[in-house]
Length: 411
Ligand SMILES: [Zn+2]
Image (tube, rainbow, N blue to C red; front, side):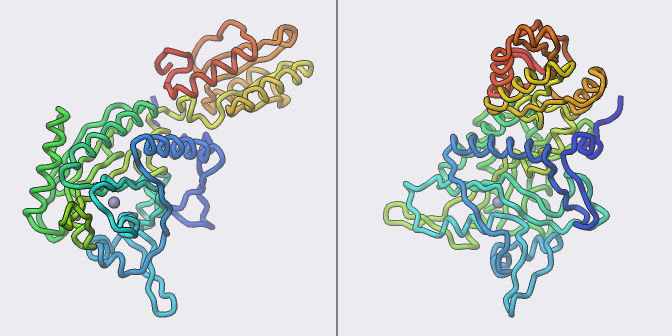
């Protein structure tokens, strides 16, 4: 069995393209890939809203001083693009969104009743990967992160971590990603890490206590922390056996200190804790991972095309177009393949594109107003009416289930 590689599957399914005219590490999202990405973005924004997040848009550029203040300039400069000189002022492409969200937090005075203050953004950022290191969707120079930051009081940190891990669970279920391994990523030695040992110990104790409270097992890794604090990394293994971090939760006492953030509690001015988190990583990395995990056979709600209608003979064309239009009116993604090729060739083509449902329309279906449906990798279903077919696809898509028939698992 061949090992799934997202670059090969991505090419086959027309998910993305690269072009020398644009440059290495800068993939172009093609229509099929843009559908998958937009569905994931919509899902994650809904999930965040249900968990009390507010969404913002912040600039992809900032003055160099902002990243000097945050420490990224010291700790992360090798991964950043060189500053651009704009009539004496230096601006940089952002390597991370955290400092911009800090500026949103401090745009207004905050009190205890405003906390936890949860911000989210599909934030585009830039990483100066060497040209030898870039490739596909997983090593890129520009990426859009499902980013979020929670500014909260100390006693709120543990319940925020629990809430974030709950969101991860829901997301992995919908995306049909197997359960991850939790890793506590701790500070190592050396100058890479900012702040005092005491601060690190405090942050780590909070993370351990949250995990213990949830009864979750975890492994530990030294030297894998962010420069500003310890992390819980959710490690998944791709089909090639490589481990990667998809989701992450980070507890940070350092950046609120650097930026002098505060909130009013009674008569006192207190520092908030900043929890950095991503539920599904960057859009580039999650789509690469999904392509490999599912061998290109996306769950119905994510599939670029959910149904292809195949008319047999010219007399079936009107009915076939009617079925396609009924699916589209229901908000589903359907195409009609009426090319002058045998039915077998058109079926094989749709199967190569891993389309979840093929609907075949011939003389009998025209006469009875029905369709013959073949779900991906399954036997043909008994003939059903057009409305019944629309309901079937709509129901499975809305349930965000991995199976192609209600109540079944992945075929
Ligand atoms: Zn952050």
